Each structure stands twice: as structure tokens, then as C-alpha cells.
Length: 148
Length: 386
Image (tube, rainbow over all chains, first blue to last red; front, top):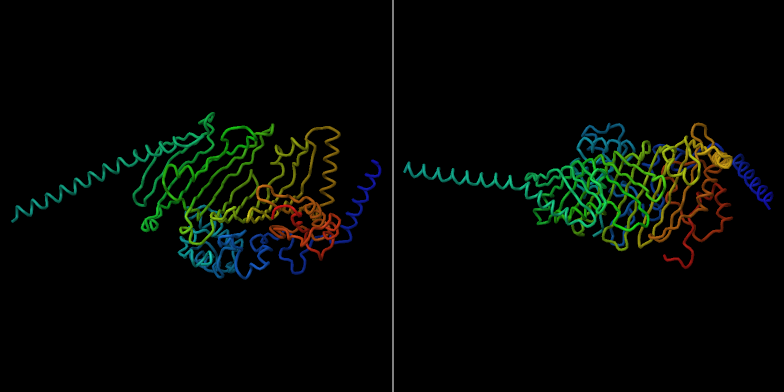
């Protein structure tokens, strides 16, 4: 019984190993794959898969009472809001103009954290209401809200 | 005429002096009155005792500051090991809300130290204080926003012999739209953003958005720890496995969404350059460590310099009793090692759900085919509550 189990385990290991040699051992990004392996910019650029399931065009998913719910802060931004935030960060000297990409990317988050720290706010790197207010923007122009 | 004008001016001066004296008296009395009220509020807390050094009320802007606030559990709490301490706690009234006759406040806590202990099934109120609830006892305000700057949180598991700890420091946190009345929230969800350091090496970030008016609770969010040295988990794994991992790092990504009493999402651990050693010099433990290292080597992507092992663990089910799906996690290791290559960050989170239940054989077969995509979370079994 024990030898049979050993044989089975050995066979499984050999099968896995051979599978590894016949498939891609050196990981590469799939064509069209959003993130190459260990691409450090991946998390900030990620669009969650459930957003593609009908939510992408209509904004983030809604709670039963109609409030927008998001797994990341960029999902709570209105279209074009990231650009407005970047413009204000550039104006405040926290972000270089050439690194502004109209997306809430890693550089923008780092700039937001620097700006928040300089303003005595919690340096989370996420665009919250107090940060938006200090940047001279209106929260209603930046964040999506419940449909009236 | 001249005398009358002089008398009028003198009366005005007397009134001004009296008003100034009243204002100074009021101002001088304000801090002791606020300190008294704070002491009363702290004394009304159930299961806790509180103390502080001083209280200061500012009139412009209208706010209130407690210095060196300390809270201990009662009974048995020690003042030299409080479960909550903060250098400064500011409560500021939101002026534009005041114009609309709404008492709404923002709370800012500077350098707090919070201890959370898991005491298992022991009786008694063993938990960290709910800061907003306690503040509500001290001040009758709606708290709209809470900020934590340079905070520390220590979680200690008292149910384990080694009392392992998780320490988060350098914690910056902003929670907003917390107002309990719907019309104050301006149609936006309550959000929580946090950033800090887990242990000595893990860069931690957290984002949660939630609907405080939904019943049952509705929320969504993500959690990320990057670069946590595996050696820091010694106290957590050594006791149970008799192994430890002195080399290597762990990244952890999680994404979740809860609504209608159900939660779905996934956790993705990525182990890099992990090497396992026996905690004690026994033959059995050495064999276990050898097997573990073989397994890690076999399942890793074998990219020099990182040798990463990754998978995605789907989480589905009722919020009170979520189902962690083990099989997609196991086949995920195989897929990441041999088929697809390890992808970082939140890729494949939350994992896609299979349209109908698949057998373990089918799940394994699909995981080994590149075109099939990542292992899928299995839908709830018939009979489970949806």
C-alpha cells in the first residue's frame, strides 16, 4: 500500500516536472495579458476583472442602496478626475509634468502621499476628500456618487 | 456737551472691559469644564477606564484636543500597558456644517498605539475600544472623518503558547464619509485608506469602501503586503510546523466584495526565494524541511533571483462563514509554476467563477491548459444560502 502511494507520488512529481519542461518554464507575459510577471506597475494600473463584467461603462458596482462600491480608489473617480488631480499636484510641485499620465498610477500615488505629508494629512497615497479639498478641487467634480 | 460725550465714552469703555473680562473668564473656565466633561465621559465607558494629561478647547477653529489619552481594560488593565494611547486626539467641528445646524466633527489621532488581543473563548470584554463610539459618549457629534497619523497597532494571539504578534507601525489612515445620517454623506460611500509597515519589512496598504446604510453590510476593497521577510513569521509557524523559513519574502494580495450577506474574492500569496529549515535538529523535522524545499523548488517559476511560488485562493460564501477553496489554490500553484508564469499584483483577483461546478479532475485539467485562464472559483453548492 505504502509503495503504491510512493509510486503514485513519484509519478505525479515526474508528470508535473515534465509538464514544466514542455510548457513555458521562463515566465513571459501572455499576448494581451495586462501584467507581465512581476511588473511593478501592475497593481496601480490594474482594472479588476469584475469591472469588465458590465460595470466598466457604468462606473463601479453599486450597493443595495445605490452607493458606489469599489475595490480600489481609482474606481471611485469620475472620468478625467485623475488628470485634474495630476494638474493640481504639478501646480503644487509634488509631481513632474512629464510623468503625468491621466491615470492614478504609481507616480501619482507617490506624489499624492508626498503632498498629503506636506499638508499634515495621513500619507496614504489615495485621493480622499480632505486631499481633494486641499488641492482646491470640489469633491463632487472628482468622486462618483449615488445616482439621484 | 463735552462732559456727556466723556461719560458716554467711559460707559463704552466699562462695557468693553466687562465683556473682555467675561470673555477671559469664560475662556479660562472652558478648558477645566471640558476636562471635567471628558473625565465624566471616560468614566461612563463600559469595560474600560481612561485618563489624560490635559484638554484644550480652541474657539477658532472650533475644536477640542485631548493630550496623552490612555485607555485600559477594566478590570485588570495596567496603566503601563494601555490598550489605547495617543499623543494627541483632536476633534474639530466642521464649520460649514454648523451653518446648517449640523454637529459634524473630524477626528485626528496623532501617534496612537493600539493593542488588540485575541483571548480566545475567555469571558470578558477583551477588545480594542471603538474610538468613534467612545468619542460619541464624550461629545454628541457625528464623526465624519477619522485620521490616524504615525499610528501603531499590535495584534497578539494569547491563545498560542508563544503569544505571536503582528505589529503594524508607521500607520497612516484616513476614514471618511462616516456620518451616520444618509443626507450627510453626499451620496458617497464610506471609505478607508491605510498605509503602513507590517513587522519590520512588509509594506502594507489597504482600501475599503462600504455602504454604512446597507443591511446586511456591503463593502468592497483590497489589501496588499509586499516584501514581508518570511523569518518574521517564526512565532506563527514554528510552533505548529516545527519548521521555519529564515530566507525569502512573502507578498500577499487580496481583493474582496461583500453584498447581501455574501462575500466573494480571493487571496494571492507570492513566496519568493523561500528556504525552509527544521526548527529543531530531529530527523523527522529535517525530512519535513527537505520535502518542503523540494515542493517549493518544484512549484516555483525557477526564474533566477526570485524563484517565486504563487497561487490564488478563492473565497466565496456567507459573510459569517466564508468558504476558502483549497483545490483551485493548489492547481493555481501548478499553473503559475508551469503554465502561465507568476503574475504579480492584483492580476486574477478576484478569481473568475466557473459557470457551473467542476470536478477536481476538470479543475486540474483546465489549470494545465493555457487558453483556459486561471483556476476558477467554484460556485456555491446547491443548498447553501445565496
